[in-house]
Image (cartoon, helix red, strand yellow):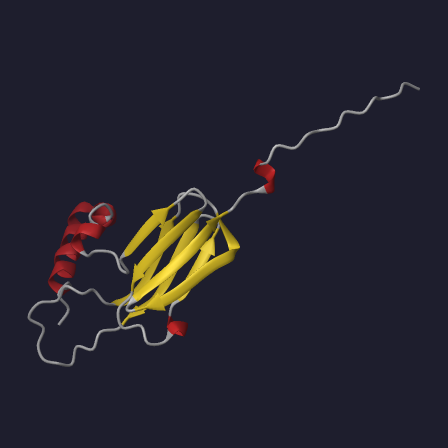
Length: 144
């Protein structure tokens, strides 16, 4: 049973009436985004905790970092063969999520670990060489 099936039917009818973009601002309210994350910032680091219950094969989780975006792709699998769903609050299924980061991060210094249903991702701020102050030497131009 898909708890969002009836909501999908309503959405199709409202899309027809109001236009396809009607739901863009309500999407997170209707069906919360998965996976859930917490993002913490210090001066030079970001620490992201991602909720992914039941992850048995780490190769089925893709984590990408592109400058100032963290991208997560995978599947949250739930064993639901124990009868008819009465209440379902733990979201599951295929996910693809892009998280904008508050600053650019280094692609060469990323650590990710998994324990007890949580993925811990440590990112380090990119200190660009172009942002540093460089002294310019002035030479005397000799006249010819």
